Length: 410
Image (cartoon, rainbow, N blue to C red; front, top):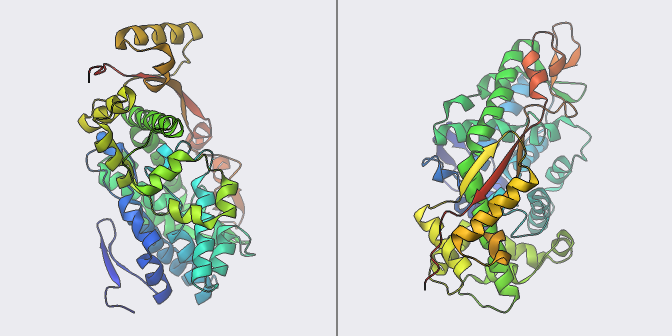
């Protein structure tokens, strides 16, 4: 193996890359591209330190997985070296299918193509490149491996993905409410009847974890300024796609141009690997490069939204617990058209409304507690944890966001 097999991570310190295969995967251009995709998209408009990347997160999650598997081995769970490496690769590649700006553009740059499906297709692509060495990783990722607890560690309500991103996002944003004590949670993990369980003495760490995740959603992931910036970006891409498909040509990267000119579906990616390879060439820089070029574009929608991004002149947003009445929305639309001086058909690019929702705990995807008597119960049934019952309720907030002013001169 090459000598650079240790990475210094700001959250965990030194992380060792444990095998030649994992090193080769990390070295792959499709994985290296994660360095150019920010973990939290546009959140640095609110928290300036939130500049960490999907690359940071993937490496950190792999590190936590190795600690978790070592801990389970110490408690008597048999894990072969093949399973160990496969689980590490599954968590390392769980986000490989994310595109530029991740969740913000997941359903506008590509219509209804979830990143999980693209991650799966990319792992299959890697498996072909590496001569079938990722067969077990694929089975774990798709929950087709008979030892189900491996998949739970990769994807569940208490998976390694969440343990890393909560700690990492908390660290880089400075939002201390997100602190979760992942070390203790991992120490309390065990396997019973092929399910991940938490020892009863770790129950308050789980309550804190669920509470911290809920707070991070409202304070960071669904912060109203972030929601506003994401809506602007979605509108910008919608306008660019409309213009591109109406015959306008842009000076942008070849990959971005192709995705704007097409309306690719999941089946397109499944049947044509070239589309996937093209998508895996894209990162945040494709979008930022376009925004810098579009700030002087003749199209006033493209020009204005691009200028707004570059000067952080974001849409004004109102967030409320109650849904807006149809007549309120109609009035706000009229006022916005009048204030901005735009034709009604273009309002959609400068005005949006909808809802964001957040939950602490979903009972259908249980977190299991192993009691001192050896019973396995759902964390929400633990007698003295009323908070978790409350957190099972989905909370919805409603928003309206609109441009404050436009530069209609050119």
